[in-house]
Image (cartoon, rainbow, N blue to C red; front, side, top):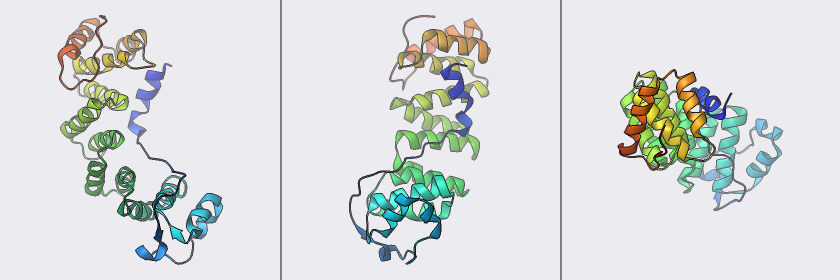
Length: 228
């Protein structure tokens, strides 16, 4: 199975989490946000977390890292939210995307949308598109935010919007977006065309129409001009 097929096959599971940072920046005390005075015993299984917590002058990166730990390892999304909020209030803007993710896990979709928009990163725009597809069932908004990410050269948003158009029955647009991948590293003309023909079952005439469309379609940072 090609790389393209594998990635497209897991799009429905895809969400972008900003990972831990190593270098502490800035300082804060645990009392500032009325945190528990005693360390959560669950953190003791993670030596790095003990170090972050036991630092009497808590800093924004340590707070963010604890959020990531609660989020991705312990799966306590309320605690993750608390630590991400601390990091964000201290000026750590990367936490906004992760706040969107945990609010989505907590089924608070209005807050998830708010934090994804605050982040306004390429990953958060892609996450927002996926939220509108999977949870809010608003495909026009999904397309809107995918297009914003595509303007910033998001390969994942390009694949996601193509998948959505295919599911909606618009294979000309699906072809148009997928053909632009040929202009990015790791995607060949043969690979993309094989996927369109063999996996999506799109006929050559439709693919040709998609090719012509992407040559003039607004909002594309790259266009494939090599012919079909």
